[in-house]
Image (cartoon, rainbow, N blue to C red; front, side, top):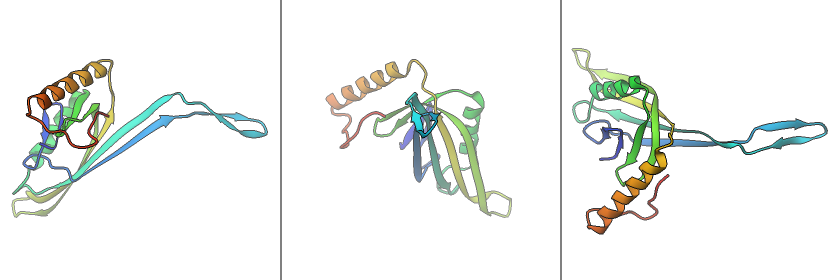
Length: 157
């Protein structure tokens, strides 16, 4: 397992992404001042986005059906917990976009290759801290039982 988004599991046989690109912003609005540089004030975190990109080869990996599953999740408009296979909890995320490009078609029109991008935005709700604490407790219990070996520099987002 590479990662889960809610109950959807990203793995080699379903939807293996080859790149995870994350962008995190913090808000610093400015106030214009006469004869001086603008004054800036930190007002909190801004957008936190992830783009998962990859290539599906339906003969080996998942195909259009797995992308349709992600679209069904997006249609629900919910926030889903995003958890890496290592146990790292990223928080709650909503799907904001799914892009796919199909190429190299079989004679019946089924693509041999599908490039995809799934865009996510972080939308933690008030229960995130409790969820993170529960996940950390479960991970610590698994480590204590010898069921899980943490990697160096592993933690929560």
